[in-house]
Length: 214
Image (cartoon, rainbow, N blue to C red):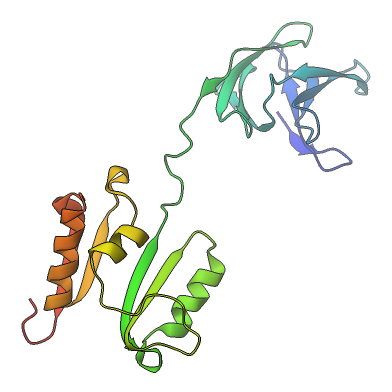
């Protein structure tokens, strides 16, 4: 099997027949929802293409099974699954039903943070947090200021409390992992509020600092 690219940049595969000789070329064309098959003629030229319907999913990966030049797996970008495909002696491809895959496994974990500071000019890692939020559109950062917020600030203006956590935290039903760090009084109040909201205590991790921290 030899891979390469056709003129428009679509990935292709030269398919070996049972005798080990190339029999056809499979092209993962980007426009139609399927793959395009080119038979390899005896003189090495390609025949006219034939289209194999992908059943509503756009193939993005073709992988042949080990020592099975007539059997390959077709993965779909749309439909979130894979199909087993087989090539007959005439070079025709049979596509089985799509087997769904849970694509949430291995996906990036949503992240967020609630940051409490007394004043805007005392907020540490201010630039770094802004850069992280700019680089990751899924990152949720909430700020609260207990004394002097920046001018024209419309966000939170108080200490972290139960109502604030209910608004910014993920719901307990999603079983998020929560890390609370700060002075002992803040940590204890925030952790107690999270548990009161229904979060699993085993998923709420804490770290205290200051004279009474531990």
